[in-house]
Image (tube, rainbow, N blue to C red; front, side, top):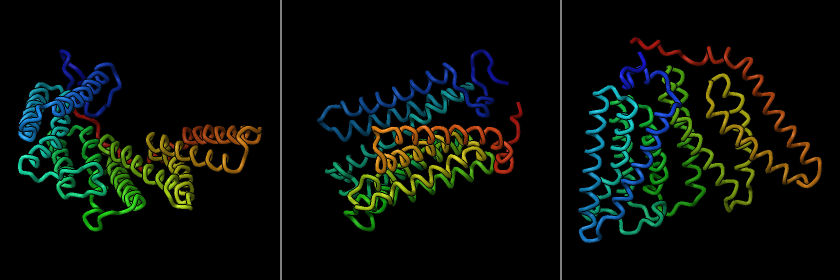
Length: 314
């Protein structure tokens, strides 16, 4: 059972779609979210904290009510996106409330160096709200907000123990957090929750990439601390992407592999001479051949790795 009278029924939960309605739903959600915070930012300066709290709370309640109505009518994706919008307003409500009680820090130009426990608290509350919304809706996109809040919180947490940490300390925190998120995604994959695992893979590897990138451009004299792990991890991700059937691994793996290889080629060869071009040709060919091997043998390995979820019962 897929659709009836234009209403998206629960089978949509099992088969993600990239079709015009979904594109418009998600694009509309992003536009609404930006507009909502644009509205909050344009509120009158007089009694600003009260206005921020009231308007943010009103939007949160409106989105939550819309989510319940849409889900009750069988519109699972629009209803889930409305729930995501409600969760997205949690930071606005939290900050507005903290402003009302005069607890929000005055200077937030750089929360990584001007730490306040309240900034970490907003991240924690947002993550918890996202988990509650997922529990109520089972809409996997909500994990994008949960994981995003976890990543932000992980960068704020070290300051609770030692204020004024260096950029390398925060890069290390990003590497640890991203790795843990990917591990969670792998376990979700193993137990058949592939759709729920996506954002743990996508944002987890993005966080790891950010940490490694800092090491490649940071003030340390040994930039190989970033390039060498990027090359090794990139190669391993490309190889593993076939057996685990994760295109996100392939994308990040290829980007890391190409970035590191080009760095070392630029370092050792003249980019204006033919050896450099031939070397890049070989790199492209290696990626192409690995793609053929994964297509041929990856499926057999994936059957050993992934636990298949039971078919959807209509």
